[in-house]
Image (cartoon, rainbow, N blue to C red):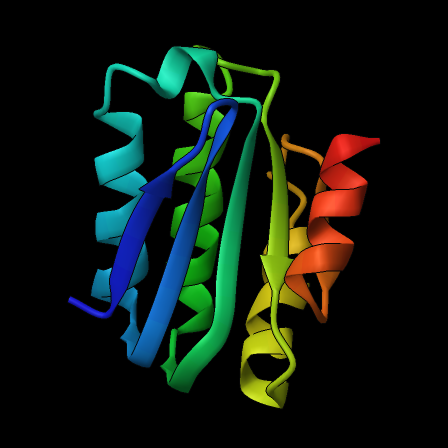
Length: 121
C-alpha cells in the first residue's frame, strides 16, 4: 500500500508515498467512500509530495472521476485539493481536475499550506 489516510475533523488527508499505482488511488477512494465518516466530509486532500513514481493510466483516472461523480449523490459538499510538484503527478492532477465528469470543486496546489488556505476560505 503506497498511501495512508489521516482523518481530520472536517476531512481526510491522503498521503501517497513511493510508487503510486492505479490500485493505490482506487483503494484509497473505496476506503474513504466506505467509511461512516464519508457523509460528513467537507474536503479531501490528495498529497503526492512524498510519491516517487506515477503509473496512473488515463483510463483509470476517468474511472476514478466517475466513482467520485457517483459518490457526489451521497455527499455533494466535498472539495478536493491535489498537492503535487512532480510533472507526472501534475499531469494526472490536470486530467482529474479537467474531466467533464468531475462534480467536486477541485484545485491543484504545490504545497499543503496553499491547499489548506483554499479549503479554509
